Amino acid sequence: MDLLALLAYGPDGWGDELLAGLRITLLLALATAPLALVLGFALALARRWGNPLLAAPATLFATVFKGLPELITLFIVYYGAAMALRAAVGLVSDAYVQLPAFLAGMIALGAVSAAFCSEVFMAALSGVSRGQHEAATALGLSRVAILTKVTLPQVMRLALPGLGNLWLVLLKDTAYVAVIALPDLLRRTTIAVGATKEPFFFYLVAILIYFAVSLASMGLFGLLEARYSRGFTAR
Image (cartoon, rainbow, N blue to C red; front, side, top):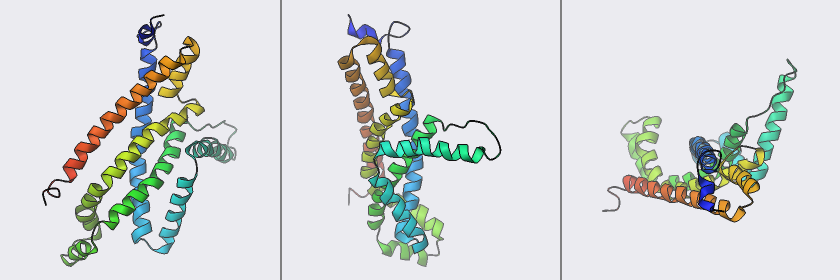
């Protein structure tokens, strides 16, 4: 059997199926990343600058989701949230409610990634000297202006290497959604293996696809790091 022919498009090959799975994988990662960044930064601000009423729940959130395995978190969100929704809907209707697998994966992976992002942002915030905040306050800048014009640009420069690593972890963690029947790259690869009985070939192809996406991501983050580090390297 010509193995490369198995990657052809159409009914005789699996190339279009694998590309469709890659599309789901990338969409899930790209939809989850902004959620993780925003939530992670908010958690870091609450833990570092917030009052105890904000810092305590933020620390608890980060601790819990850093400690839970991603797969268990996914099951909790997918089945637990569905049960809660059905209980709420059951008060007014007999309709059956099921949480979409894509949304469940986005919430679960977003919560875990946000917990780790908060640690990266905490370290980056520690790298911004307090004197700059005091100087900006003395100039009459508002707290929002200080955050967006003084703190955030420096935080992003310091946080980008860590965030790049977390993005690569998120890309790999998207494979967990295969267990809740979301047709991502891993699930479609597994289906192809079952149909063709060529596990080594198809899993090798999946590895190469993940590796290619990771290399492209590393290159992009390298460009971003160079962009945010302009002026600092020279000094």
